[in-house]
Length: 181
Image 1 (cartoon, rainbow, N blue to C red):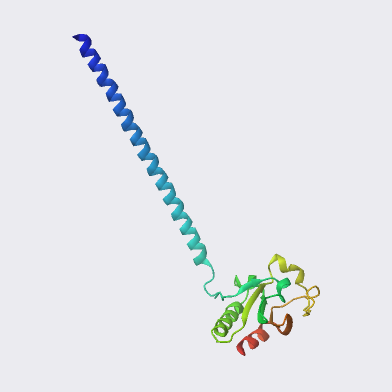
Image 2: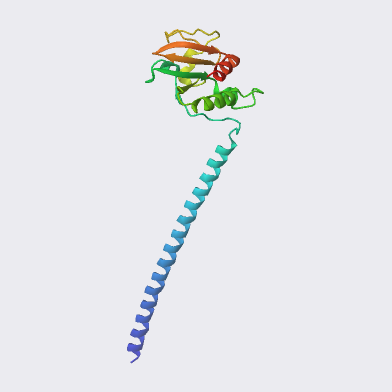
């Protein structure tokens, strides 16, 4: 009889061990799941915080106009027969370098122009882009031979049939031209 009781006690102990091991496994799984969810939530909040903070920290005065960015080498090879290209140095407007933010002024004129029914396509060239560095010079040389094209100042080009039809050099000339579009 004592042996039966001892066997029953051992069986109960084994069952208790199995139950505690199962409970321990379930607790372990629950803890791991909670940790994974917390880590994912933490990454989500950190990412959204930093991304939104970076987007919101950008200068609110800069109005982005809908245009395609091209390089100087692509100036004459767009698919349209007639279009405008504004070559500018965006870095000048990303800080408080100047009291007048010409980029905003350009953007507003271009936005108003694009709302017109028969408006031509606008492209932009960032002269600070590494692909455009070879076209930067101390003097302006506006030519259709792109290997000899040199730019010192910001320029608005009107391109027609893959040729430079008009060019406006400097901020005041660009603004005058944009205001007359």
